[in-house]
Image 1 (cartoon, one colour):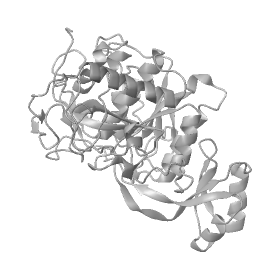
Image 2: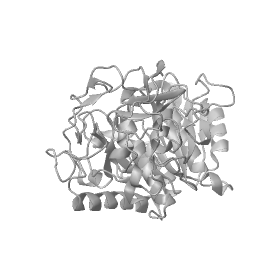
Image 3: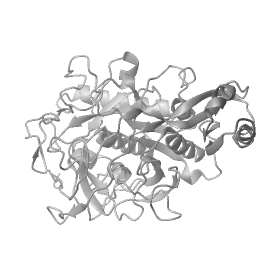
Image 4: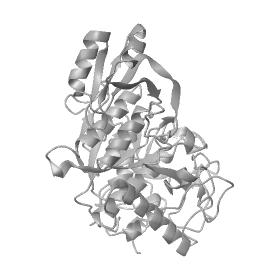
Length: 460
């Protein structure tokens, strides 16, 4: 096509991240601290228990708990500060399924100073990542200035989204970060950190005359702020999943979230029982959210390990998205591994699996693992644009792809059926067009590490 921009250079944000030299990359799906917040727990009720409001109030009187978040939709339960000497009695309460510690996640990095460099051309820029998955050949033709996805809602469970960004269609959202985000009163889902805004731009930056364009341009984005300056904990993320699920259960069909992206991770595993045996409240919530109709794309993680050790990527009910490297927007390899003038060869050569990316090994995990670009990605940040790396930013490529697939009615049915369509379509195209993929995909495996097939937006 005539519209192609290789090496989309929009602006820079300075901050920590997955970077070969530490200079230009914003961060990734973070690893979890193995410790829990002292005294903070998640209480999950058994099915059939009275409403969580009444049960939590009863527990407050009986066990002296200090309730915080209340969960009504993706699970019944609450988060609370619990006296140490009351935990055993609380666990033995006949209404309680289990009590689990409120584990702490590492926060996305604080937003740095944006240095607006301007575009290399006066036109809107087609990022290499969007180009590499043929977003410019999709039903919306990302980059032609006219594409728009309607009728689909995508939630970004992250640090919020910059609600004033001219390149993003933010429909609304929820603040699940305990009111400690440092943002404007009444607008608690506005982005104070930058990570969520970056994710949102990859999903659906508008196809207009400015900045960048996303996989599903102009899609309705819902900002679910779970990360404050000290980072999200389990209770915050549960609040986010619960809120997303609530949109499927209220009386307003226009706000039904169809796709949600989570680019925050923690250590854990899939117990094969939707969290019941492992006392994993997040797994319980996501299973019920999926049952309500939400398709989840989640980052595989950036530790170079098996996703069997990372949640929510380990859950069979989600699309676990790995990262591959691309430096020119087209297949074939051979492009120098450079991003903004920096040597990124430590990440991988052009069209290879990113060295930092987690991967699958177990047969059951291979069934829900898929790949997307995750190195030298251009997207939106509060007040401008940036470049970043990590599976945090490969995941929203797939979230946008799911939205496209639903909008074109090529994906229908349950989230499990939508996941199957996306994975099957990617496998079919890659096998029929062997030069499309990358070193590390199932056609060019790297040992036992399974990164999945590269998605292709042009199929929707």
